[in-house]
Image 1 (spheres, one colour):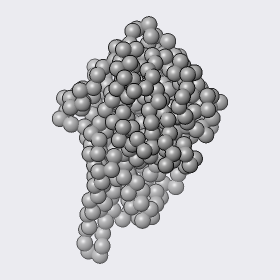
Image 2 (image 1 turned 45 degrees about the vertical axis):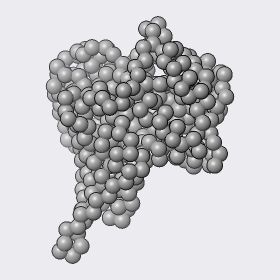
Image 3 (image 1 turned 30 degrees about the horizontal axis):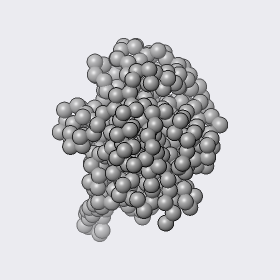
Image 4 (image 1 turned 90 degrees about the vertical axis):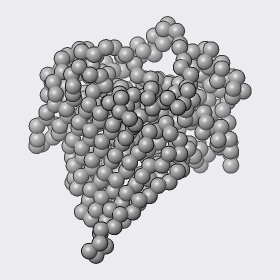
Length: 403
């Protein structure tokens, strides 16, 4: 097989715990050719270990080149860096979120772009797709239910001993300013808490559930109800519900709870359909090769049958294999530009619905009706837990796979 030379932008927790070990495992598919992090010393350490050039400026790494593909693992919005890589003719695997605003993706060419949602590549998710097809397809789904219990990232990573980078504030400032401009374009609001809810919860964690809904039934059709609580906590708890899209006439419900001292990460997604249920139980994404459990419940005659599927094949590794096929064989990824944009629009619909109920001024893309994407549902009323405008401290989340 052809070996693809890759550059890596961003050497934080995700790179150290997931991507670097997997790329070392799959030297038959990829060869690291360059690494970059805003912390120069950290980049040089990783570069020495990998035996490749190290950079503290992504643009400098792109200009120097020497690789055919780029893996983007930086914090915040990835829109500007992905655009720069695509303009140079590189193939790109970009971890979520692809961008904070639709405007950042204007004029994008998605021909060489893959957005990373590893849970779509989980063998249990793929087997669920098969079981759903056997049951009659998305149109038989009555309800999709998802619950996430999210402890602190620190507690999930106690085993990893990842090295923290410490870039100078002046190195981070231009990227933080670009993120703020993108958030203003998306939300048009000065509510720091609402901006953080959108960027750090919806687009950095809940997007995984949105990507799975999109894979199984198509993106949600409506956002009928959003609740956020308690006011004094951030990250908070979040509840979203509405109608499913495509050929499905069912509904969905998502509950996402940040519980910093919870014993372990738990995520359960269940699809109830006319003939039974399909349940996924995901472990912490940082535990490589820890299997996701798929439980298929059905009926045979008068017998209730339960079949449990577990596969230790690593979802991130399967995603990397898919990226290799994308680069070498042009096999389309499960999520490209279009799917990532759908998730951004759904996140905007969620924050739009909540802001209207809570009386928080909102503008930008969230206040516009773009091809009906932000339309209100025909029936039902929104509800939620009110918050004070502008509460919550400013900050940018580190790139996280479970948040």
